[in-house]
Image 1 (spheres, rainbow, N blue to C red):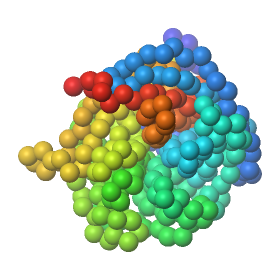
Image 2: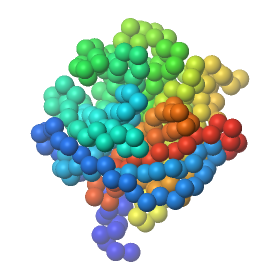
Image 3: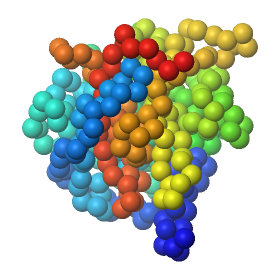
Length: 326
């Protein structure tokens, strides 16, 4: 085995495993850049209820562009992706729009060290455009107005003991107005249960969230969530594939926060493990669109600012009539 491949494998593993801190050098803080979105060749393939329809690679200045860990739908024409350096990328849906992709900063993104700006998750109120961001290391939820200006922050006491690099990786405003935030790290090594908080309303206002445990398929980590009606959500899962070079495996589960196991924990239902059905990369953002021709799931990958990874955007048709993987 060549020494170079060993070094690259070690760097990638350290970059994405919860509880580790290693990243490539932090990009300079000069933002307001255009990015490009180009289609990639994909083979239409199906896993469970999902069929891969199209894919794109997104690129920008290598020193500044990347690290996308969250994805929300702004409107019928645009997405917003958040990065783990506290930046935002607003871009047109590449299947229906030629709007430019613009990388810029949230208003607080240049304040303090990188650890205080590690945005890992986003939620949105589609009627008002208000955003909420989940931050690791400082274990906070920040609210932004419709112009993406910070206007409030809360650090729930229940999140204080979440791992610094394995914290609020998933955040969703559910369709009924409740909020769900999930810790990336399991309660114990290789365990299935992850702590989560359920807020009855805006986390800034609700000071007494309910703490619950969520069952996740073993060895997977929850990395993002998106609402699908009522108290239900899709949760995007990721795990490291121990290969040379190392890669990633991706899965999606469905959760209903009103369903409980006998011990009070919340079960999830595995919808699909993708394997080689999609281009393998570090997918960390998920969103759902309802279109005239069907319902679609979108995934975005986090390149960790590493040359051996890419920023990919995938479009998958979601046919709820198809049997999920049981």
